[in-house]
Every structure is written in C-alpha cells, then in structure tokens.
Length: 348
Image 1 (tube, helix red, strand yellow):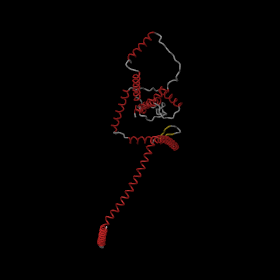
Image 2: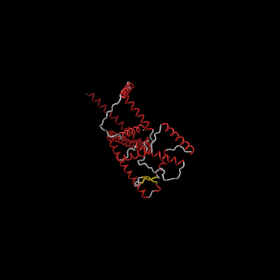
Image 3: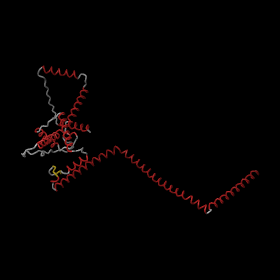
Image 4: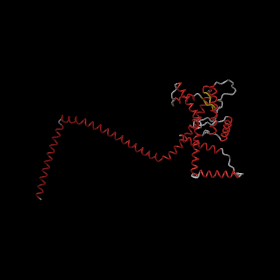
C-alpha cells in the first residue's frame, strides 16, 4: 500500500512541476568567460570530473542519480502530513472562520492561546497541502484551479510554512505519545477498538448537517425543517449519482470479465449441467433402491407365514406327492423310449 501511494505521489508531483514550467522559447544566448582565469577554472573542473567519473559510465551515473532522487522523494513524502500520506479526505474549501475573531478583546487563557496556535498551524497545513498536494478526483475547472492556487500561495506568503527537520518531528511525535499515554493512564482509558471509534464517529457525524444552498455545514439541532428536507434531497441526489457511477463501473468490469472468462463460464455451465443430471440420477436410483429394499423386507417377513400356512393346510405336502408321482411317470416313459431305441438299433 505504501509503495502504491508513494508512486502516485511521485507522479502527481512530477505533473505539477511540469505544469509550472514556462513556455519554451527558441532564443539562445551563448556567454563566454571574459577572462582567462575563468576558462582555466572551467577546464580544471572538467578534468576533475573526468578523474572522478573515470571508472563509471553514464548508465551508472544516471542510476545513482535516480536512486538519490527516489530517496529524496521518500524522505520528502515522510515529512508530509498524515492526511497526505494516508490519503485521507481533505476539504476543498478551507474554512477560516474557525479562528477567533480579531474584534473580540476578551483576554485568552493559556489553553485558548494554544488552541488558536493549533488552528493557525492547521490552516497553514491545509493551504500547503492544497497547493502542493491537491485532492485528486475533484471536478474543478482549470480557471478555478488557478484561482485556488493563487489564493493558497497568497495565504502562504502571509503565513509562512515552516519546514521541520526529522529530529524535530521525531521529538514532537515522542512528546505527543508521552502526553497521550499520560492522559490515557490518568483517565483510565483503554485501547479504543474499531467499533467504539465507529460509534463515536456516527454520533458526531449525526450532529452536523450540510446545507446545499449555503454550501456549508451546520449543527443539526439548529437547522430548520426546510434545511433538513433540502439536505436530505441533496444526499439522495448524491447517492443516486454515486449509484449510477458504480453501476457503470460494474457494467464495464462485467464486460471485461465476460471477455476474459467467457470460456471458463461456458465450461462451468456445461459441467454444472452434467453434475445436476448426475444428482438427479442418484436421487432416482436412491428412490428405487429404497423401494426394492422395502419389498425385500416385506417378502422376508411374509415367507415364514406362508410356509406355516401351507404346512398347516397340508397343501405343500400334496404338491410334493404330485411332483414325485409326475417325476416317476416321466422316468418310466424315458426308460420305455430308451428300450425302443435299443430295439431299433439292433434291427438295423
């Protein structure tokens, strides 16, 4: 994730730097050194560079320069605000009314003074990020973008942005962590989970209301019924537009996936149909198997009763006697035929 964000930041920074370049001109001026000492100094510098780079080719030099540039960009990216590093949402229009009005002459205590200093520094950071790291994906015209850039530059000229060293940032971060741990320990606060954070966020967000007619947020308890209806209509419109946009994206992705996975889908449908047919056959065979199993059990239970009935009525005994008599008659008839055959053979 960090590498992706870093690459995006590098590309955006490169585009902004290229956009600020002046229009190219075809006017060339060649200035030669006016004295001999300058010429000899330049020649000595060239010889020194040749000596230093005698063992390196241009590819190695370019590679080293590129690595140094990447390292500088990484260090610069680490010094940016957390909103830029983590790609958090940032306001497009900066609200300066959070500062204490200058017309108020009431004295401030130390806590209020510290709060005002934090607000001032926050506004400076917002203007700096808006100028050097503008929010991507916003539909702002080129003319408005230039006006916003000029506005941010003017504000930063009046309120300078101070660059801090890595040691200063580390020291400040350590002080904040120490203070947070102290407050957490003294007030008995534990680690805040995602559920608790989401609950607090929802409660805070439900207390504000966006007014489209005034293009600003206000407290929900001070809004009129008309403002609530207008805000709900605007929210519904935004949700519909977002739904339409997501539907278009989904349709494009579905089309791409269909082209990419069309063969697999057809093969999967064929295999699914074959599996369904096999399952139907299995179900049918299971029904038939259970049916014949029930018949077998019924027959097994009925056989002893039938034998008992036959013996009791002497029906089986009569059948056996008739069968024996028939077999004896057939054996006698067979013997007569064999004797007749022998007589015929002797006559021949």
